[in-house]
Image 1 (cartoon, rainbow, N blue to C red):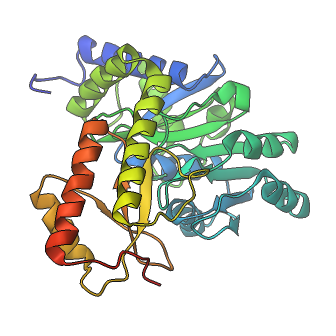
Image 2: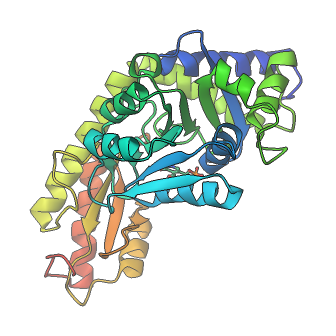
Length: 350
Ligand SMILES: Cc1ncc(COP(=O)(O)O)c(C=O)c1O
């Protein structure tokens, strides 16, 4: 990232081509798929995919169990694209039966959109099973794998996933700046003229990249070059299996350490993935999230506020360039902070 990069130079264009190729390989895509990179954060690629593939004459079922499913439904609503939802609340995974039941009742549904790891809670949804029910009924299967791709296994061809969206800065450990859509070539071809937006038009973005290897509009050159390096490191470290193992060790260390202190988790171990962990805020009146956050930050740890609709909570990520030592240090820092705040009753606030 300390070098100067020209977006039209051949060296940079080769880097972009290699990123596109590596992403397709990593997702188990055969030659019926394309990779379209989009400037902007993950939500930009989500809106691009929904606006390009879910036409006015289609109907999309959005499977919701948290904020990110809800956001996809909100985008479709804003775009005036027909959409229905299943809502499982924010601490339960939708089952394949839930999806099958709805698809049988609503036969006009053409597309199914769901989230791999719902980062609102950390829950990992059953991708293979949901995709299978949708595919069996001839639906187009679309997956938000923003917070999971690179650490949770995904085989788009084998699992029949037609569209997948992710970004540079989660499990592949790049820096923020762009997102990408992996999708079937046939879907891209059919999407010509369907996008609501010039900037987020996936067909045009793809045509641009294919015609001369360049982006239509200025790309985040440094974020792309950093991501290329991140992909090489991901491979060198053992790929998806090794990353999954490291994040799982991180999650285990954090959950065990926090439970030992007296904190409780939203999810049981059976459906808490290795990506992010949700803890109930303590009932103790001395607990205040903002103070807790600032005191942890002063000790070198940045955490997330909760995103649950019903109960006060906070979240701690177990992904990124961190290992068990960092997780142990985080638990020690939390013990120190709650001691300083005089929080003694760690049972969950209602
Ligand atoms: C599952 C999921 N979808 C979508 C997003 C949105 O991504 P961004 O904030 O990069 O727009 C996130 C971000 O954390 C996410 O975890």
